[in-house]
Length: 135
Image (cartoon, rainbow, N blue to C red; front, side, top):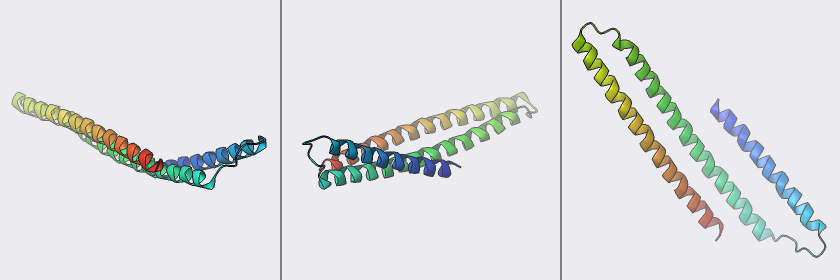
């Protein structure tokens, strides 16, 4: 489901960018004395756009995978929460409650660490794309 939505979003974005480029070229050519856009500049922009689209696609895929993993962990914790009511003794109830509590906090810690790593990766990719595009 996410793959199809992502693919449709990518196609729509490419079409929009292409339309904007054509519109911009047409408007610039209407101005008298305006310099014609150099092909080298256009190629740099296209390379940048393509690289950025690829990078953004990778980031979105990683985010989707991370979200999927988080939902699965959350569902497991909800199932364990319902199993707490099946405890027969107060000691068993206490042990299951502590186990669930620890598991929930461990999952939350992992989620935040994964989000931080994802943010760091996105910043690194952004810097890489912008520095290589300007060369």
